[in-house]
Length: 630
Ligand code: COA
Ligand code: AMP
Image (cartoon, rainbow, N blue to C red):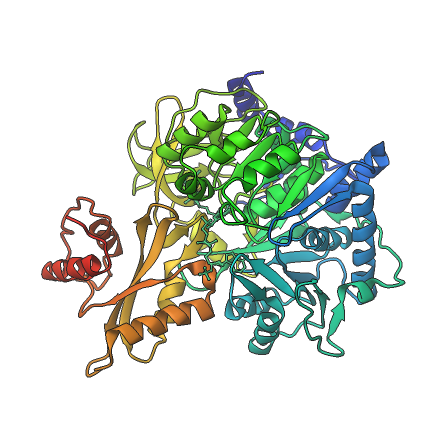
């Protein structure tokens, strides 16, 4: 079947389409139907089925006789370690950890926070939670203690599973002190913590609260998989919104299993036993879906990579792993390829390795710039597929579904809507625009299986953030275009979310930190264009009247504050002091106009601007930082 046939088949009978897809996963009790719409516009999938994610991702492959095949390869160029875990090993390790969690009182529906670097134990912790129906929430290691505390208070975990340390190329990330600080800051206290002690750092444990990973499991009875309902939350993953408070995306079990399983073959062309690698981090949605769950649900081999695209030790590390692990489909962020291209423009490292198993490269997480795509196409001679999705959706909204049909690539477009997604481009009044016209990208409800069911503890926020602006649609927060052939083009965010090196960040959260500085009266943070990272945050500070302190000191302090409060991942390094901020007459800060000035783009003077002269002051300040070139 061609893509069009598959998409049309879904559109003609979505219920049949998803019930057929559901046949591919294991159910203890099959669902009576796919879509449950009695609470519309809140939709659920496969609610009355009973299943278990860990059974689907681990046990069923062992039972099918594939226990000796590799499930996970750990590649850590930072520690020089390479280690393989078979499906049988994984089953043993996960059921043991699950048994220990259960013995300590973790039950179906309890939350467990996981704060770990890129080691296989992170996946084991996720799967152990899934095994007993506990709801995990993985927090990215690049977040500071305060961000971890916010998540502890929001999802109130019974337990936290962490590692003693993570390893960045230039430093050891001391997870344990960050964890201790976060627990001190949070109002909610977990009952206990499980700490995986790494060789590189043995953390001090707090007696009575902290358990050593191995000791914790010693002598316990391994746990079996607990059947859970299709609509039981599999996990909560926090993502940035417009305000400083992160949104807890809730993914439910049945839809997650069915959708991810469908994508492995149809989008990534991965079959049972194939080798797949997503070079992301388990703290992000790409890591949840494509490092941990989807490859294992499919019965493929996944790779846990602890390193960077460059500098660990060189710009050929990706290609070395692809060669050695015989990777068939590789998924990374455009920024990683840009970093490699900058160090190795002629692809000298690429020539050193035999990459004949590699059949496709997939890119997502941010806009894929044409230069990078063309470079990769030329250097690898395989399809380079841009695809577009979000934490909220959990899998691709638009892609080029290689396992169905390789569609012509239009550079600059992540291609076409996947089955389940009916994409419209809307004007401000919510009417579809003509092909080729720019508008807000919205998806007709219901969203397909595997997408967010709601926001944790915040159904109202879910409705307000996504379902209210365009009734009958899910608002993606992205603006773009759809052409005559149905190819979409993602142009910009419609909110204050920015994308730094494929990491989604909230400028609102950074503004909250800046405005807490005692000398700052008012502030704004914008995302400016960056050749390597796509965007970089840049802050404007208006100081309190009478403040005579050196501006450079204040800038240093706010940079430190953002690092301490949000974390190094925010990459907040640029700020300047200005007298005033440009605003509309009603007092709204003109962030969009400041972005255009910074990026040296033409802009229309906003009709509602209060004082146009301020824009000249902003331009001078930006020029002082090397932006707003003539
Ligand atoms: N734990 C702790 N700190 C982390 C971290 C983690 N897991 N990940 C990143 N950081 C820190 C880095 O050490 C760095 O700190 P520094 O300011 O002390 O140098 C900061 O956060 C910014 O990190 P990063 O965005 O990785 O930038 P970089 O300059 O170190 O590397 C790239 C640049 C392009 C190589 C890197 O951003 C990259 O690999 N990007 C791909 C991202 C990706 O795969 N995203 C997946 C989304 S799909
Ligand atoms: P995240 O939730 O971190 O995955 O970030 C999702 C956001 O990243 C989207 O809403 C887009 O703004 C952006 N994004 C992701 N993939 C792409 C892509 N292929 N092209 C353009 N933007 C993308």
